[in-house]
Length: 141
Image: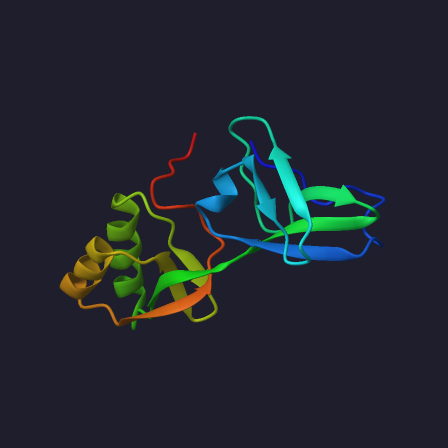
Protein backbone atom coordinates (compact mmCIF):
# COMPACT_ATOMS: atom_id res chain seq x y z
CA UNK A 1 0.00 0.00 0.00
CA UNK A 2 1.36 3.45 -0.86
CA UNK A 3 0.42 6.77 0.68
CA UNK A 4 -1.48 9.01 -1.70
CA UNK A 5 0.15 11.90 -3.47
CA UNK A 6 -0.87 15.41 -2.52
CA UNK A 7 -4.69 15.48 -2.68
CA UNK A 8 -6.46 17.90 -4.98
CA UNK A 9 -7.13 21.21 -3.36
CA UNK A 10 -3.68 21.38 -1.68
CA UNK A 11 -1.67 22.13 -4.86
CA UNK A 12 -1.66 25.85 -4.06
CA UNK A 13 -0.90 25.43 -0.35
CA UNK A 14 2.61 26.34 0.79
CA UNK A 15 4.63 23.12 1.09
CA UNK A 16 7.31 22.01 3.51
CA UNK A 17 9.45 19.10 2.32
CA UNK A 18 10.22 16.60 5.09
CA UNK A 19 13.35 14.59 4.20
CA UNK A 20 13.04 10.90 5.10
CA UNK A 21 15.43 8.02 4.43
CA UNK A 22 14.24 4.81 2.74
CA UNK A 23 13.93 3.16 6.17
CA UNK A 24 12.13 6.17 7.67
CA UNK A 25 9.58 6.10 4.84
CA UNK A 26 8.39 2.74 6.25
CA UNK A 27 7.98 4.10 9.80
CA UNK A 28 4.42 5.35 9.47
CA UNK A 29 3.35 5.48 13.13
CA UNK A 30 5.56 7.96 14.93
CA UNK A 31 6.24 11.54 15.89
CA UNK A 32 8.66 13.65 13.87
CA UNK A 33 9.65 17.28 13.60
CA UNK A 34 9.43 18.99 10.20
CA UNK A 35 12.23 21.33 9.06
CA UNK A 36 10.05 24.34 10.03
CA UNK A 37 9.84 23.03 13.62
CA UNK A 38 6.24 21.75 13.43
CA UNK A 39 5.68 18.42 15.16
CA UNK A 40 3.90 15.84 12.99
CA UNK A 41 2.13 12.82 14.43
CA UNK A 42 2.03 10.06 11.83
CA UNK A 43 -0.61 7.35 12.10
CA UNK A 44 -0.88 5.78 8.64
CA UNK A 45 -2.25 2.25 8.26
CA UNK A 46 0.19 -0.62 8.71
CA UNK A 47 1.81 -1.47 5.39
CA UNK A 48 1.75 2.09 4.08
CA UNK A 49 4.83 3.06 2.10
CA UNK A 50 5.58 6.79 2.03
CA UNK A 51 7.08 7.87 -1.27
CA UNK A 52 8.63 11.23 -2.16
CA UNK A 53 5.69 13.57 -2.78
CA UNK A 54 3.36 11.76 -0.35
CA UNK A 55 1.31 14.07 1.86
CA UNK A 56 2.14 13.62 5.56
CA UNK A 57 -0.23 16.28 6.86
CA UNK A 58 -1.87 19.59 6.09
CA UNK A 59 -1.74 21.94 9.05
CA UNK A 60 -2.72 25.59 9.06
CA UNK A 61 -2.83 25.69 5.26
CA UNK A 62 0.67 24.22 4.90
CA UNK A 63 1.19 20.87 3.18
CA UNK A 64 3.92 18.63 4.63
CA UNK A 65 5.33 16.40 1.90
CA UNK A 66 7.83 13.55 1.94
CA UNK A 67 11.20 14.18 0.29
CA UNK A 68 14.01 11.65 -0.23
CA UNK A 69 16.74 12.38 2.31
CA UNK A 70 20.38 12.17 1.28
CA UNK A 71 21.74 8.72 2.15
CA UNK A 72 24.98 6.76 1.91
CA UNK A 73 24.74 5.13 -1.54
CA UNK A 74 26.87 3.23 -4.01
CA UNK A 75 27.02 5.08 -7.31
CA UNK A 76 27.52 2.36 -9.92
CA UNK A 77 28.76 3.35 -13.39
CA UNK A 78 28.73 0.26 -15.63
CA UNK A 79 30.80 0.62 -18.80
CA UNK A 80 28.69 -1.73 -20.92
CA UNK A 81 25.16 -3.07 -21.09
CA UNK A 82 26.47 -6.49 -20.05
CA UNK A 83 28.18 -5.01 -17.00
CA UNK A 84 24.95 -3.18 -16.09
CA UNK A 85 22.95 -6.42 -16.44
CA UNK A 86 25.43 -8.38 -14.30
CA UNK A 87 25.40 -5.68 -11.60
CA UNK A 88 21.59 -5.42 -11.62
CA UNK A 89 21.22 -9.21 -11.40
CA UNK A 90 23.72 -9.54 -8.52
CA UNK A 91 22.30 -6.59 -6.58
CA UNK A 92 18.76 -7.89 -7.16
CA UNK A 93 19.82 -11.23 -5.67
CA UNK A 94 20.63 -9.29 -2.50
CA UNK A 95 17.01 -8.03 -2.58
CA UNK A 96 18.18 -4.45 -3.10
CA UNK A 97 16.78 -1.71 -5.26
CA UNK A 98 19.09 -0.65 -8.11
CA UNK A 99 17.78 2.79 -9.11
CA UNK A 100 18.75 4.59 -12.33
CA UNK A 101 20.00 8.14 -11.80
CA UNK A 102 21.06 9.68 -15.10
CA UNK A 103 24.07 7.76 -16.45
CA UNK A 104 24.62 5.82 -13.19
CA UNK A 105 22.70 3.55 -10.84
CA UNK A 106 22.25 3.92 -7.07
CA UNK A 107 21.94 1.30 -4.34
CA UNK A 108 22.03 1.74 -0.57
CA UNK A 109 25.61 1.31 0.62
CA UNK A 110 26.86 -1.38 2.98
CA UNK A 111 29.90 -3.66 3.24
CA UNK A 112 28.36 -6.68 1.42
CA UNK A 113 27.43 -4.42 -1.52
CA UNK A 114 30.97 -3.01 -1.64
CA UNK A 115 32.39 -6.54 -1.68
CA UNK A 116 29.99 -7.61 -4.43
CA UNK A 117 30.75 -4.63 -6.68
CA UNK A 118 34.50 -5.06 -6.14
CA UNK A 119 34.22 -8.74 -7.07
CA UNK A 120 32.25 -7.87 -10.22
CA UNK A 121 34.81 -5.25 -11.24
CA UNK A 122 32.12 -2.68 -11.98
CA UNK A 123 33.21 0.95 -11.47
CA UNK A 124 31.52 2.44 -8.40
CA UNK A 125 31.94 5.10 -5.77
CA UNK A 126 30.40 6.01 -2.45
CA UNK A 127 28.42 9.24 -2.16
CA UNK A 128 25.65 10.88 -0.19
CA UNK A 129 22.62 11.43 -2.44
CA UNK A 130 18.84 11.26 -2.20
CA UNK A 131 17.73 7.64 -2.68
CA UNK A 132 14.28 7.03 -4.14
CA UNK A 133 14.21 3.25 -3.74
CA UNK A 134 13.18 0.99 -0.90
CA UNK A 135 15.27 0.06 2.11
CA UNK A 136 17.58 -2.95 1.80
CA UNK A 137 15.38 -5.41 3.69
CA UNK A 138 12.11 -4.74 1.86
CA UNK A 139 10.54 -7.25 -0.50
CA UNK A 140 7.71 -6.78 -2.97
CA UNK A 141 4.37 -8.01 -1.66
